[in-house]
Length: 113
Length: 114
Image (tube, rainbow over all chains, first blue to last red; front, side, top):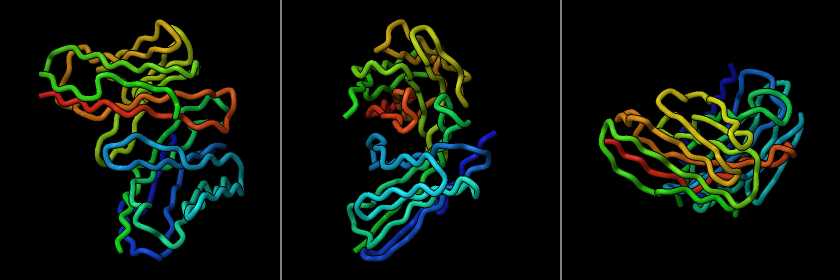
């Protein structure tokens, strides 16, 4: 059974600082997704990571995937208040396009001035 | 934004009553999903559909049923609502013909069962 663990679950950062959110998963998978959720809102897709060594960047966020270590990271560079949100990773349950997603519990990020 | 509409957006009802939530999409995507989101649990899959009249159970399907009579609509029914089903329910859609496409989510339905 696939399990997905994110850490930390809560993260309070100062503006301008860097930090990394980790997403570990327990069984082989070939697809990992990162989502952002603002309070009371829907989930917004940030990144799709499909292969070992994949790296994607958008603004101050960079996501990477190491399928051998079963680990993905979401790195935040020079945080700003607008990045305050909850971030979820989600992993496909088995290789191939037919797998469903298992979500981590989310990391609630608060960026303070 | 993906064309996904959930209705109702908010509902308060009593224990033991039936409740139906609707998800409507305009993207003609084959796959549709129902999740529930609870504090400390992230999102958990309830049921999903891979085509008209084709559905399957997810991680937390007990107490829920679904139906999909047309591509654009996916209904989630709580036959006899319980307080443990108080949650925020999200519908999602995906076009899994391409693995680099994420699931797209609706705005959610906040359901309170008293």
